[in-house]
Image (cartoon, protein in one colour):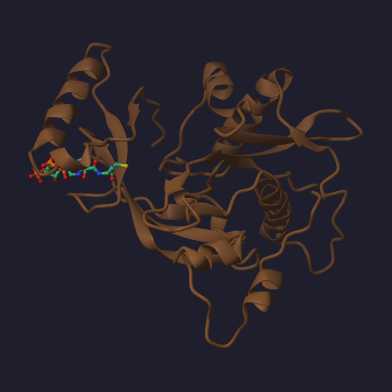
Length: 283
Ligand SMILES: CC(C)(COP(=O)(O)OP(=O)(O)OC[C@H]1O[C@@H](n2cnc3c(N)ncnc32)[C@H](O)[C@@H]1OP(=O)(O)O)[C@@H](O)C(=O)NCCC(=O)NCCS
């Protein structure tokens, strides 16, 4: 049964390294709970790399190498025995320009269209757990800010309407004890809406399966996201295996990571959700 509920999303729980294992995390959790309750909100969703009882969903991280030499130098990835650095660089090269006509940075004037696009997309996908955005959310989370969030829309050249969008955010990691490299520039895939299946455009015979077309459109959009991330000097592009991400991971050369991300709900009993039925992007 479909139900919509106001809940909070908790992210970035962090205790200073020197203060760990002193049970400060439960104090922080109690205090944030008190503050959230004051707004008459009693449920939350949160994620963690560690296993706590009991996840709503467990998803896996995937990584698309954009800078093989640096990733190998710093030990994020390794050079397979049967290849050379030159071949590895060639393998992960991306084009210098995006492909999709009308692909451009999102602007303030696009917010209303992006709101409708995203909320309609989630409804149409038959997901089991997903956020419902407000116009305020769209402005806050998606309007591009250099070094924070990168959002691109596709303005249809004929209608001038926005019919696709893709977004990723910047979360750099410190590289400890490396003589040259201090920062790993990592982009994380955020929300997206690919082009809708258009009956007029697709030849019918042998291609009746709409999901093939959806996968094709999503791959094209993600390819342009990777190119944009490379142009913005990111070393790696990360994503989870939630939503329809499984449709592009192999073809666009994402590698399966070691890390999982567990999703949890606070004060809400809910059955397990498969990653492809989950629409909530968190860290
Ligand atoms: C996650 C973090 C705050 C936990 O702090 P800590 O000093 O290791 O743990 P504390 O001694 O303060 O607290 C331990 C309790 O917190 C719980 N806990 C640990 N991590 C948790 C998490 N991510 N969410 C909720 N509870 C958590 C433990 O289960 C334990 O409770 P229990 O004894 O009832 O099982 C700390 O390890 C950290 O800052 N890590 C880096 C950031 C991070 O990974 N954040 C996770 C969310 S993205």
